[in-house]
Image (cartoon, rainbow, N blue to C red; front, side, top):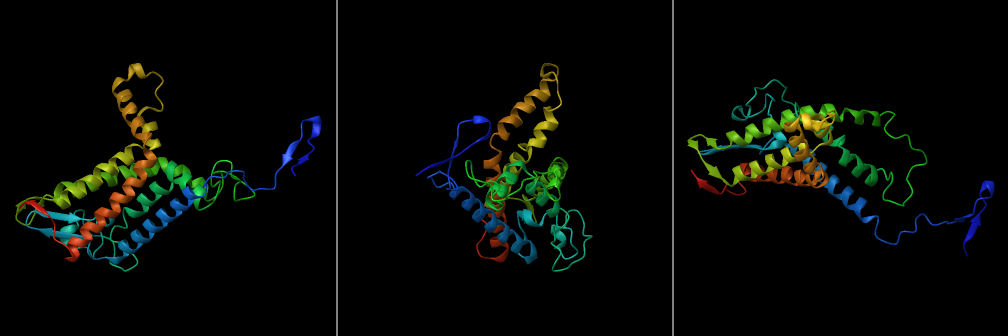
Length: 270
């Protein structure tokens, strides 16, 4: 039997429902998949950045550097992979790409989509629509540590620079010890770079930088066209966030396999 609770002011009573939610669909599936996917990716990435091997290979017509080790600035880096010099100490607990990884992590953690993803999945706040929050109180992003989510706009600039570095890695990947060449590894690197650029410029901060403060689009036609382009990408920000996780892992795995000798790079030219 459904009971009712009396409300003040003579308002109509509300049904006192003891169930946590009346949803009968599998609302828990999306948070579960998010937890599984992000946990698996973080585990793989953590292992790889601390392996400090199988990250670079140079041949007759190619030079492949995995994005997990770019830029390689540790004194333990292979000299050919250190395009920007080596100035970090060589230590098992310091990743070879320690200069870029913290900023990339900050950019992803503060991303508007990822915030929604791990708030709903790991923190259950809330796990789904029409499902109660897993916490008794809610302070939003106004207190420590979530107040640092506001650093996302600054992390974007760092991610932009790192995307330029990844692009440079893709450009020089065509040149090896015996001149220019072209292989499957080049395609893998470039697909990853293109997807990374799409994810980076689809960021809400980028959209605001381009056209967020304009009062008259008609007076700024170039920026308006750029804003409309970024806005279309912004609508796919969630998909691009997951696609780039996949391309990063696949690119790293491919370079690792070629470097470790598990398989040979498929060469088309040289």
